[in-house]
Length: 297
Image (cartoon, rainbow, N blue to C red; front, side, top):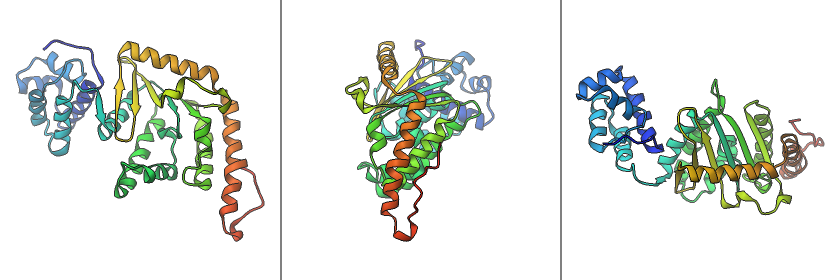
C-alpha cells in the first residue's frame, strides 16, 4: 500500500491505536514483532501516514485488547477512510482530538456563541431546542461540551481567536439571566492571554462569514484543518485550496471585526445594560435590586 500524507481520518485511527498501545504497555517495536510487520509500517499507521485497512485495524485491535464500542469505532474509521462526511458523533470526537493537538484555533460563530465558550446553562438551552438531540441525551451532551472545553485549560493551550456575530450576542438564548451570565463568561475568558474574542458588528453589513460557521485548526506536525459542523453531520477540509479560502475568510473577518477592547466593551454593555435589567424585570419583586452595575469590568 503506497504511503500518503496523513488525513483527519488516518490521524484519528492513529490516536486511537497509540492510546490503546500505551494502555497495554506495548511499544511500536513489540507490536511489529507480534504482527510480523516492519516497525516502520507500524509507526506509519500510528502517525496516520499510512492508511489502515479494516483487516489490519482488526489485527491491531486484537493485540491491543480493543473491544466493544471502541473496536466498532476503530473498524468504522478504517472502512470510512474515503468518505468526506462524518456523523455528528464521529465529528465531535475527532474535532476534540484535533483541538487538543492544535497550536492555534480560529473560529467564526454565525448564529451562537462558539461551543468552546459556552456556559453550562447556555449549552443546555441550545441542546434542549436542538431537534436532533433527544431529551434524555441533553445532560450528557452538556457534560460532553464542558469536557471538550478542557482544551482551554491545558498547560500549553492553543492560541485561540473567536469571531462572534453581533446578532449572536443579542439572541436571548435561555432567557436574559442565562444570557447575561454567558456574556460575563465571555468577558472572563477574553481576559486569558491565549484567548482573543472579536465581535463582527451589525454595521459591517454583508461579510465573508455569511457562508456559515467554521473552525480553522493549525498544528505543529501537519497541515491545517477546517471543521464545518452541523447538528446531524459535518465534515473536515484539508486540501490546500480549501484551507486558503478559509484563511482569506478569516483575514477578511479580522479586517472588519471590532478590536479586542471594543469587543469587550460591547459585550459588557449588552450584559449590563440589556440582559441584566431584563432579568431583574422578570424576577419576583422581592428579588429585584436597584443596582444596574455589572460583574465584569
